[in-house]
Image (tube, rainbow, N blue to C red; front, side, top):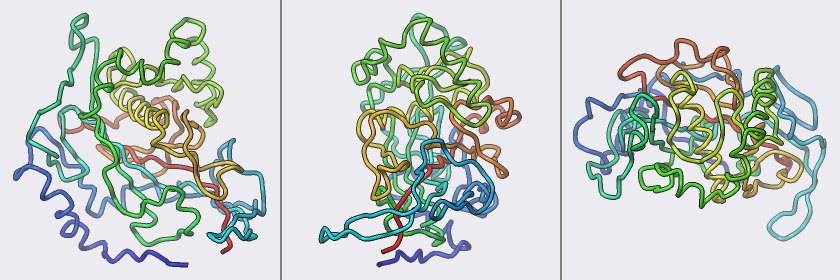
Length: 343
């Protein structure tokens, strides 16, 4: 089995990361765009390394932590090799840092890339801070950038080839909302997810109370896929949110979840947990909430724990934002992966 070897040392991360964005950003740092210092010692100190656990092998768990309700219940498995020959293996599962989502106020601003901008051009940029029917105090709008961030591979830690479900091995930009006309327009977002009409009623909205209660215990309800627990309603899949949804961590967490849900809805995100994902992930049209957990990386990192989708910010979000540079947020998206190891 070929094994990817990460050639960098931590001391050279800043120097080697610079060419990643040097050709696509402006020449100077934007004073309105904060720097999350991702490519620094924070890559080690501001990560919740205990959140990798538990690691499951053949049904046995190593370390403490929560296993999602949709994880595999098998101990051994069969997968076919490229020649179609079945091979015996044992099941493995763990929480893996898979994506980095930055929620920003200023278009093209990227705190993950040192506070630089992707582009100085506003061509096709029609984002707005609200609607004509509302003023700025009633509605909020943020853009997002979605990165592949396979941290265990980047740092050359543990990983099995078959357990890398989507094949990403580097830090890669996958999606930007500035070029997505549905992200700043609820009506256009409706046409990409017409099921929104089914949940725009008091009964469906009130059901989210149960999801919020379940998320507070660390077990969001998969059946209520239109709910994001205590953070609000999952639909419409846009970046416009009432400020009545609460503190900034609550709004930005909701938008990070909507971004992930919209990518699932468009066939751009994978389901990597469960018995049917042991031999590889597959496209799944609705977000499997139990498969994901979030931890804030910037402005105030969660270094001791992460949280499930919809978990109330009273448990984890207090003191994690501040005016000015602390209003742009970076979230590390943890994804549970089940795989069949043994070849």
